[in-house]
Length: 182
Ligand code: ZN
Image (cartoon, rainbow, N blue to C red; front, side):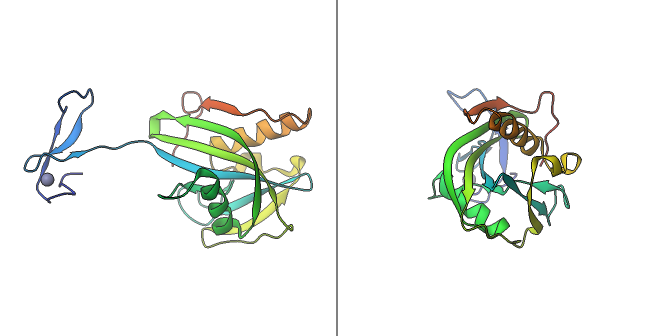
């Protein structure tokens, strides 16, 4: 952010009055360019004891398996974001059951919010960002080909919680032990 989004002049690194962080501040109009964490909404989609995974047709992690998830848009709720991403990436309609996993990933400024949900009518496909979608039984999960630690963590929680039919919300911070990029 070397140029001001407000007036187009150059910015400089500066701690604004009353702030504690370095920000890009416009040298001409004084506009402060705040950068805040991004929210990623997604769904753990379940159908007849199986979970829906999508193989990524985009970088990063091209060809690896992920849960349908993506950046939350303005003017939508997190649930709508999760349903929209599932529609876009897996061409599937879901019913959201509950908030299930939240991950802080402070190193890259992201918050993941994943909803446990049910696939409606059993239908799914592959959107533009997806090579293929597939329903997996626990024993067939491609553990070594998962795109992100948040995906692995969510699946591990699900299969563990499923043993007791009790699905508490999991709030965790990733990125200290687990490497997470992208
Ligand atoms: Zn400016």
